[in-house]
Each structure stands twice: as C-alpha cells, then as structure tokens.
Amino acid sequence: MALMDFIKKQFIDIIQWTEEGDGTLAWRFPMRDMEIQNGGTLVVRESQMAIFVNEGQVADVFGPGTYKLTTQTLPVLTYLKNWDKLFESPFKSDVYFFSTRQQIDQKWGTPQPITIRDKDFGAVRLRAFGNYAFRIADPKLFHTEISGTRESYPVADLEGQLRGLVLQNISNAIAGSGLPFLDLAANQVMFADALTKELAPIFAKLGILIESLTVQNVSLPEELQKILDQKIGMGMVGNDMAKFMQYQTAQAIPKFAEGAGNGGGIAGDAMGLGAGVALGQVLAQNLQQGLQGGGAAAQAAPAAAAAVGVKPEDVMATLEKLGELKSKGILTQEEFDAKKAELLKKLV
Image (cartoon, rainbow, N blue to C red; front, side):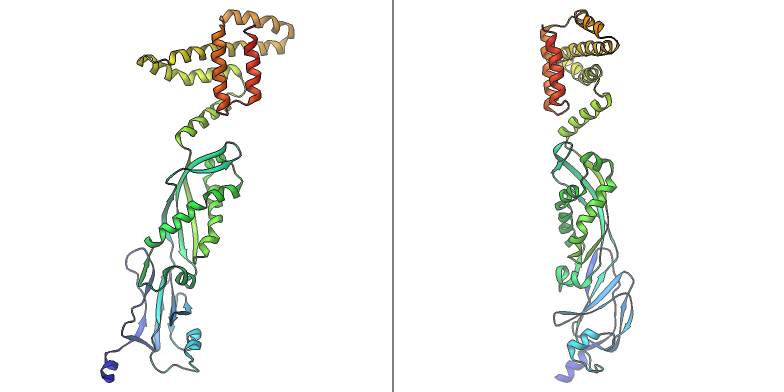
C-alpha cells in the first residue's frame, strides 16, 4: 500500500502562474497529492510575487524571476524545516502567487451627501465621485490580513471595503487640506492629492499601495447650489445697491411670467422688486451726488423719491426682500441695517 501511495504521488518540476482573465489578486498553486522536489523551478513573472507558506507560517517571498529551489533560495523554509545543507526528499508547502499590477478604474462616490465644515459657508453638504487605482505592495501582509488560505481572491471581494475607506476619509482630507469648498470644487487635483495622502497609510496596513486617485466631480445639493448661485451673482455686481436690485428683478422675471400665466400671486412680489429697483436707483443717485456735492445730494433725495412715487407698502416689501437675503447669508447684518435705515427715511 505504501508503494502504491508513492507511485500515485506527483513531483512538481515547475511552479508558475499564468493569469487568466482580469481581477484575481491572489492564487494558490494546486498542491493536492503533489510535492516539490529538490532543484525544482519557480517562475515568477513580471507583475507577480510569490510566497511559500510552511505549516501556516509565511516563509520565503519571491519577486519576478526564475529560481532553482535549493536551501540557498529558500533560507527561511530551510530554517523552518531544519535542513542543514540540502533537502534530499520532496516536501509539501503551500505556494501563493499575487498579482502586483495596477487594478485601475476602481469607482468611488458618495451615495448620500456628506456634511463638512467650511470656512465660507459654515456646514456644507456635498457630493463627490471619481476613481482610483491600487496594487499589492506587500504580499506577505496582504496574505495575512486579507486573502488568507483561499484558493483565489478576486478584486470584487475587496473593492467594497476600499470604497468605504475612501468615503470615510473624505471629511478628514478636506479638513486636513484647510481649503474652502469653492477652492476644492475649482481645483479637483488638489482635492485628490489631499484624499490620497489621507488614504495612503490606511491602505498600507492591508499591504496595498494606492497608485492614483481622481476626483471627477464635486457638487452641492440643489437647494444649496441655488444659494451659491445667488452669492456668485451678487459678487459680480459688488456693493452697488441699484445693480443689486436689478439683479434680483432679473431673477424674478421668469417667476413673474410663470405666475402671470398660471394666475398665481407672484406678480405682487415682482411689483415689490420693481419698487426696490426704483429705490436702488434713488440711493445710487444720492450717493453719486453726495460725492460731487454734499448740499445737492440732500436736496436731490426727496425730489428723486417723489419722482418715482415710492409708497410705504413698496418700502416694506423691499425690506422683506432684504430680510430674506440676509437670512440666506447674501447680505450681512451691517449691510441690512444700513439699507433698512435708508429705506425707513422714505417713510418720514
């Protein structure tokens, strides 16, 4: 019986792995009923690494190349097996191959908006997405932490974990960069660099090197984007009150047309904005005349107000609009108080 068992055994001359298809990170060489003999050959191709595992303990690690298996090429295994000079008889040992090429176009994205602190807007909820590439850098660590004794380990089993690590560290990356949201949105490469720096030591604990990461889009939820658009619009007109009122009127014209067609009540709001435009023009004229001559400005104000026919209800409507802009952060408290004081003078 022992003779038959010996005959059935197969002795391995060449140990190698030719990858078939994409997406396999680790693969165990089939060793059932086979043993490695002295002088056998190990072939590790470019973009691969291999490790020998003896009785559950990682022994020797091999990079690309062709190796004749002797006590010289297997120093750790020689020590574990207590081979003094040469191993004469065949032996069993698990051999694992690892793909070290880049695994590209791994997707990441925020399924729900995430909240971050921002120096310009306070708390901001943003969405972002992109892709990244990684490779196995430390096969021994990857084997002990991730792939283990499985026959094969595909990328698909790891991508969910890595994607979660990316999303978990977005807030830390933004906070560590010290950049406001507008700068991050305008410079996505800077955002990607900050996130890569945050992720590198975390991936390294798994034996993985993050090769590259891209941020393809950073956006705000729709309601916050509207407020940002208003703030950008105000930045374009500056502190000119007349231009500010004209800008607000231009924003309200489409709503007015829609309300008129549907019989809605937006017309009253548009009329209030129209009165605001008139007041803005009056204030602008007063300011210009004041710079040219103090006395003339004081006389021009009542006349200009009378010329446009400002009514108390129009002033109150304009104050309400200014109050809404202040609550949205478009106007500061000081700007609102100054405009409020000027408008209230019209009621005297």
